[in-house]
Length: 320
Length: 183
Image (cartoon, rainbow over all chains, first blue to last red; front, side, top):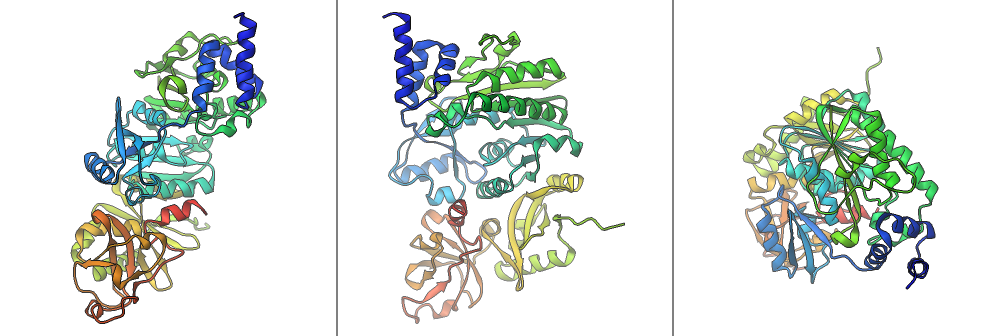
């Protein structure tokens, strides 16, 4: 088969599944033709639900036992002891009494990594910016065993309400929620040990769970996200103490929202990238005509079809 | 100088006293130890909400002062009738009290009342208007409610008699978390 025929196959597949043409062009540029097809097929699949068992309430083995008694079949996830994949369930997993008691949180598998990579410790001051709905915040609290302090910021008042509700249900007590634009947090004059910034993004990595993302964002939107993400990350760095660490992540696959944000930040700020030990691919250093810092290969890209989860980009930095 | 209007502030001594009195009177003196090492803060809004905050977090709150939405565990709220413990406050007190009503069915989680026939067992006697912590399957926490009759009347009233009424707009049962998601 000729190359142009194979290209048109992929575009046809994209049309059939309702993607915008520009998205397919970019996927091909990022991962090639064959991987793009695999990604498109994968995005049509139904992902197994993943839950995070919450040791802030009761020990993990007890939660597992309670769920198994209810007919919920769980599968371990390598490297994530608190994460379990739901293989089979005879009960609605988002409405059990155990759920209402905060024994677990429904969370995408790959969204469990950023908190683990940040590696918060008891007694530290941790920032979680753009925190709602609180999956990662409550995960941070779990890793800290409810000790130390988390400052969780959220610009939307309505999303603050959702954040409060989730943190209460999960038994989180070491967290302050502030209803504030994360870009203003430096005005508080705090020096965080570590910060997690899960930046607002186009969400092209979560098409597998939200099909509307195939049509909802344009190229212009992506560039707008890029500008916002650069300024958000730049302001975030101001809040971290020297020697402190930060994790930047998005659920987007677009280089403008990921590698190009970090590349720009490496030019502007006194931070250094830290190698991440995680499945997935290294960050892209060759895309379109962009000049991307080769250090970006230390970041990680989690493609849905390669990691059986939602798409994610994760970068870890230390402030010098 | 104009006094700063705080939306999130430390509870006053009088407010603390009301909270302690409610918990002690309803659930016994031992249950007060649930608040050890926690500082009480108030969120002023349409409703005056009470939050229990660890010492370290409380110190940080004093440094921030503005734009605070909430912090720590939502313990309960004040109404015209005084302080009332809500779901998370009840969860804190649960291991330290015998004022527990165990039920066989889940309807309390859907904002429905508890009837005599729904009762599995009671841990201790109670009086009309006492607050009881409700638990169910596998001793899981369901919520908190106010008794409509004395426990001594349980064997004499009709099976359709309501023991604990439903609460529509207050976080008194754990099903609240699902109902709140849909608002």
